[in-house]
Length: 460
Image 1 (cartoon, rainbow, N blue to C red):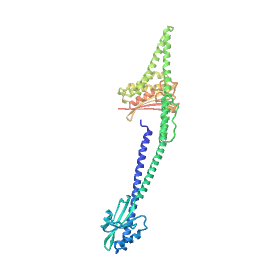
Image 2: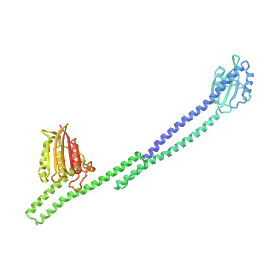
Image 3: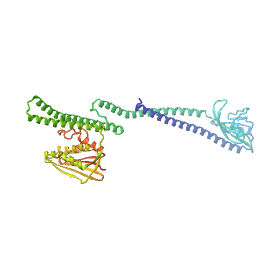
Image 4: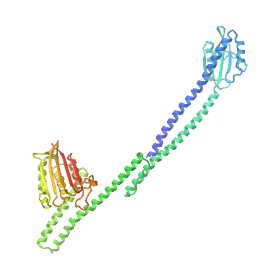
């Protein structure tokens, strides 16, 4: 597996070495061109000045006399090696006063005899060193009588260039090493916190939620640490809510089971009279019904979480459905001494939905309104069609919902009042069912003043 550290080093290495190599090549080529162009220009200047001077002053002198004068004039020049050739390309004299009779077949000399100037670079056959030479014609009156040649050794230039190459390579290596050191610091700053997060994640996976990520810098890694800690807090909250839910649902199940078990024992022992048996059977029936409701609610929630619920869509008159729900709770309203105001829009408000699921939503909302209302409380139920939507509003003047809990009441397993009966998933189920109908589930509440729930569904 290629780690991030390896990839960073690899990518940085390719980039750094590539850049240094390109810069080294450009620099060395520039230096080499500069050195040789400088020498070449010096040769050209020397040749042009000398030819112009000697051809003007010594125009009427023959080549032999002209050669001696030029020798005397250049004897102290330590930089340029001077040679003079006759028309047969034989050297008449050089800077040392030597005279060689052999013919020198050099391109620059040939060009000079033709009246041109040419600069060449070649190896000296005698000394085996690199030289650069330029030849210019010498005139006797109007005719070419010989050639003045200047030669300069480039061995020193090559040596200096070699030293520059070595120094440049060493500097390049030093730059690469220093850059890699800085890269290692960068890698440590990036990889270190990530490895810490990985270790903490392993600890959390083992069930220990006490560890938290340390935010070292205010950058992307720091924000990742903040997000990680936020996720950890949410996991802890979720676990706490889950544990509270398990405790609550266990209590909800245990209560009816205790009643069923107690009355069953009374009836089995035969100590109860007929009236007590009837009462016990009623209690067993009611508690069994309550258990069935809890189990159905849990199964519904599980299916909704897994998106395994299919809606049986049909055309529904929402006003008729609201009236049916109202009649379902009528006796309970009277029993709980709750005053109810019913306001239904005239005419039909048709929607396409699952009637049983929508019944479940409205029953759950009204059941909560009753549960959290005081004696002689007031509940209003309204339905209205406007702007392409049907709005069903259920409002009570009960205890309300604290502001801190308002955004959480539709979360799974959340119970604002742990002492109240219920599983804590009823509103979560309601919201999911409404969302499946492409509607909105809106809760507004003020603690101590009551709660308003609005179900907004699209009409046909």
